[in-house]
Image (cartoon, rainbow, N blue to C red; front, top):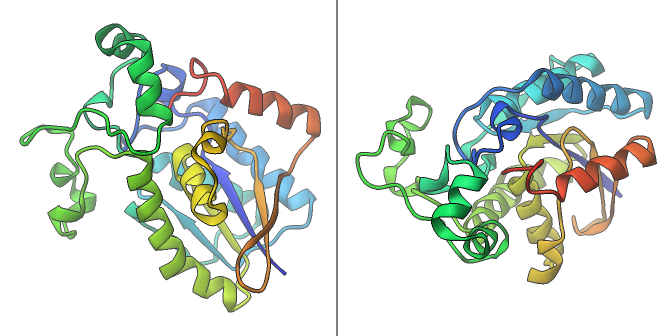
Length: 249
């Protein structure tokens, strides 16, 4: 049996302000930093140790991983960062508040964009400074790979490809892996691994700063998943994650 641990980054500044974040590189709040440290403490207390780690190229993911590894005394292990672990790209919605978006497009449409598999938000137009082609961290990538907005299925496709190409080979070598990523990245990975139905995915909300453990069989197929931490606190954070006013993407 193999194990992999995933942690959604702690609360970000735009989570706190209830703004669509996507690929915007916002920082963690003080609460977010505390959540990252607490995740590391929980992993240390439950005896987890890792050989390699993964993060997106967004600082809220990177800093969360840093503080988790710091609590574990594992800052020295290899860390790989990839844009394929970025949050879902929310296109022209990035930077807008949920209330502004609902007023402009309607509550039902916003819900469809956030939770359906194949619906893309309004895309960023050519020349928009928010396009990833304008960001130095993506300058060496083929511009054709970089989205102007994504559906959840788009996110599933890129995350699943990265899982198969980069992470699974290490798991097969018995490397112990931790991934610090984003709410929709982890939802996408769960959908990819478990082949959930769309209605099951709609009810899947990932709490911030709570370690999620996957046990995998010899074929790297899920046996079960569970959260670490005090059950009451985990349930409280799961309820918070289900509230769109407290848990923007």
